Length: 257
Image 1 (tube, rainbow, N blue to C red):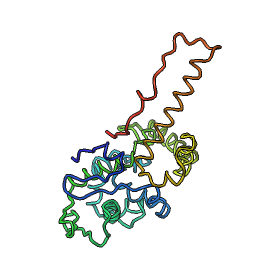
Image 2 (image 1 turned 60 degrees about the horizontal axis):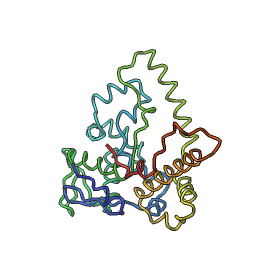
Image 3 (image 1 turned 120 degrees about the vertical axis):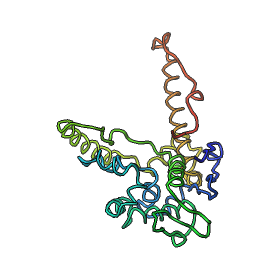
């Protein structure tokens, strides 16, 4: 498994996989140059799970048992066809190829799928098997700072009554997420304002997505600390039992587990 060097990542460096190829870390501008949902289609096949994708189904336990990951799903003809449209492609295996090409900065035509289900890029002298795929998922999850929303992932081994309740909760949570979801443009504005204008829009577009997420979270954490300090020093509040933490003790590089 590739060791993620987070210091290099926050400095905007690409990630070299243990197997040799580089994964390019896109800037905000590069992401904005993509068509609607393209970035999600290129990253989703490597950051989403079977359980997450099929939590709406009453058969999610059985589906996950048969196909523990998207790699296994791509080996099955029916699942390959069923999962592809979730990522804007006719087949899941096609979505894999499009994702590999995007992140490695190669042309889609350079990748082929072999009869044994593996993928190959002759120019890179690269064979993509399940071990490589798992490593690739690990890297893409790290550089895109993906965190699972456990509220949208179905619990295992639910009874019929629990499943009925879950279905209602799931639909409600999904509607709430779609309604209140913060778009990238909103986050860009928040970072510019939270930084007191230190980061202009022209500066932000040159940040990698990982740099952007780390800076945004750090500025918001510092803002919370500043508010707490304002309360702490206000004469009309009893603060003798308050514990004040410096923001530098709480801010760090975002790391996935």
